[in-house]
Length: 231
Image (cartoon, rainbow, N blue to C red; front, side):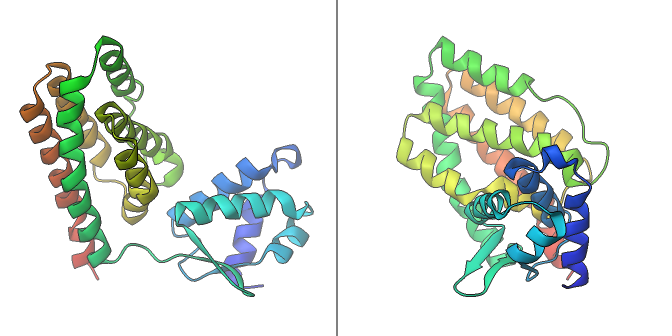
């Protein structure tokens, strides 16, 4: 077993035995991948993890299947699972180009068609997370990442196009972008920009809503682009 594999098993083994279920394994392994404790390319051997943890294969298989759906691990025939690569610069740019096509449109549609109940849901989601992560780790940013995903998904839902919403969900974009970097006040800036989007949607102004969402996505791209200049 590699050092990385031993470290992974060690992290999981620290969970109380009664908590070693698929959700716990999933969140623990995801955190290790997000924090680069387990590097891209690392192989995750089900049999080795089963022996190390003293649990059945079922929760491990379930968690790895969920991580595969997230795009964080890749299943290879006859070889098992390995940790996926981080976004390349080209993939990063493609993802933001896609987002700039679909999300400003969705915000405009949400402004046009949302009723009072829809707008209340959007405001409630905006207010559901106001904390500022206190350290650059996935454990600290996990709630922010979940809120970010819910917020953007809700805007797509309110746009009323389920095909567009499902297409967006399959990108798992917030997970992969947070995997690149979290820190430097990005949460505070994103939350401030969300508020501008919500205000425009609640006013029923499609042009203003589209512009606010476009500004938010462009700002997010600008915050993350310098990562690729460090290589």
